[in-house]
Length: 127
Image (cartoon, rainbow, N blue to C red):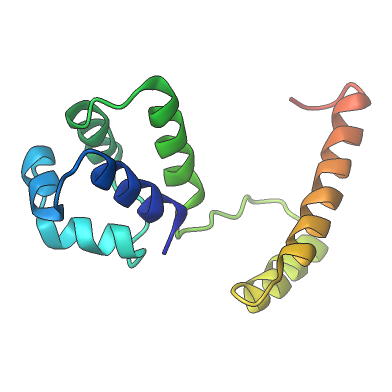
């Protein structure tokens, strides 16, 4: 299940809706709601996201959480041009271990990435 799928199911259940009822509200098929919730598809289009937000009357906090989860549940990875060979190697290595990382490994990688970003920002670099 993707973060988006988990969030969508949580919001739907909180409002006491069945998948069919959510689908009717948003104007999509119930089977699409099902595959979204199970994580068999990435996040839906911006149009569908807006409809979900509108029809479920999401609070500002719920909207932010749903949009964040949609962003991190994107199945596509766009690689920028001009990255180094080392970065390509890192992406390849990470791709091969996704799904088998434990929480400690993930925490270590996130910490290292955050250190690099903090150094870049503290040097008056990018934002």
